[in-house]
Length: 122
Image (cartoon, helix red, strand yellow):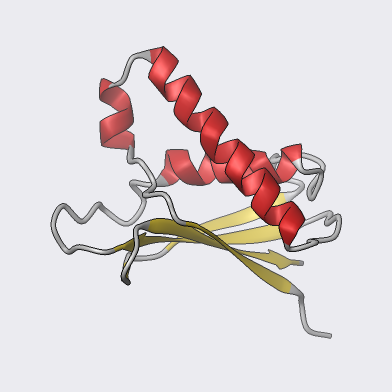
């Protein structure tokens, strides 16, 4: 039996842990809210069914090779994206029972900035 997977791409550059450390908490809250909402709606648009257990593969998409972040630096954006899946009721929670692995991949260079996550049902 093969597992089902879905790719969600948001064409907003993911922020990094380094930049988040410098923000006022109001800015951070606004950024988290925006990403959560975008991934919520993107997941619903794809008609992803309710899932009990998933893995997540995250890849930043960059249009420039200037200021390339470390592989795991986009964690705050990915966490907000997963929270959006919970908000959309794709997964019941983002705890260890539902999200069993998050993998970070080196950036892909394309014509737009963004964040790609691949959700796989397990």
